[in-house]
Image 1 (cartoon, rainbow, N blue to C red):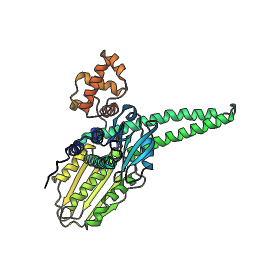
Image 2: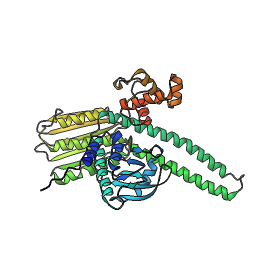
Image 3: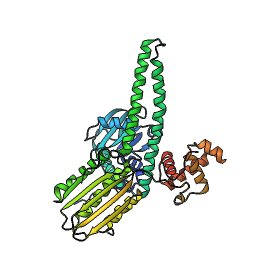
Image 4: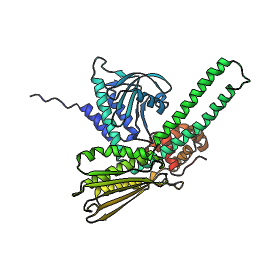
Amino acid sequence: MTQSNPPWPLLHSVAALADAPLSQIAERLREATLPSVGSTALVIFTEDCTGRPQKKAGAEEIISRVSIEELDNLRAELPDDGPWRGEAELAGKPRQALALKHAPSNALLVLTDPRLVDPDSDAGLEMLTYLWNITARRIQEKVADAPPSYLIESRAASAERLRVTAELTDLHSTTLETLLAALRSSSMDHATARTTVTDLAAKALVGLRTHSDRTTELVKEPVAKAFERLRDDLRPLTGFSGIEVQFIEPPLNGRDLPGEVAHAARAIVRGLVLAMMEQPEVSRIRTHWDCDGENLLINVRDDGGGALTTEDPNISRLDRRVQALTGQLRMDVMAGWGADVFVSLPLDLPARPAGDVTGWNLAARELEVLQHLASGHRNRTIASSMGISENTVKFHVRNLFKKLDVGSRTEAIALAHSHGMRQS
């Protein structure tokens, strides 16, 4: 019997995706798909990563301009199964696109100006679908077990994006409202032109407000909705484990949760429930959420023999995740009565002292460039202030990206702000 050679290029692509950090996963996926499907740009839109919902690779004029609103509109039109091809508004103008959804996470993959290497075969689309499913699942896994550095940076990026969006909303809303007032003035003639422009301005105002609301939804989640998603996640366990899982609803008027807190809270509760289910003689587990306005309060309790301890590897891992969000985990265990776990997760980022960046190992020049970035300065301004060339500034910025493990100026600025560097 003849033994065929292993498909090494495909295996190497899968290995590269499996090892890729989230900041590079779009680039790795694009490299893996190019032998089957060419494109000018590749964009991933995933709400699992609330701080960085877009992951992009390819042409700068596309990836720098594509918006969440455009991706959200496209996703709403797609079927749950199979690829979609057609024209879509992306990066400010209609473009040919190839798009797929990952149904379990509702993540979206978009390739602009797609070119099938073999247009007469379905093999290219099948390979793209296969690699996309691996990537989407990998993103879910990476976020579910995110290290402390990712969680802290992601929260900072979420807060920064929300701040910028709010500022843009206020600015453009004022402009459009003034325009509407002027066009509605009885002292103006050309009624038809006034009516037309009024309708256009009103539509733009609604669109801007909708964009602001959508961005807010990505970085905040109502506590009741977050708890309902937890219930959905745990529902399969209640059906097959034989253990009763009780859910005590949080107050409906509780404060909205930052996206990272909601996501981490669900992962923490899932981990606690699974750890408790591994014990003998457990027949019932109760989980309860509450919100005191400053913290999400979580309580998970079982009726086992009280064998679970904080030294358990699963509990230690969950405790590290709680600490990454500056939270606290406490466990009370009583032999014969079970374990009672209390978790408190702050809803606001802790204040950090300015200059608390020693862990980044930045050179003096790199730190100075980062301070300029945090103040909103462009490369030309930084070069003039520091008495160096723009190429040297770019060199320092590239080194900063590597040391901070970020992929863009926005992420670097958000991380700098989270450590106390503010605009001057």
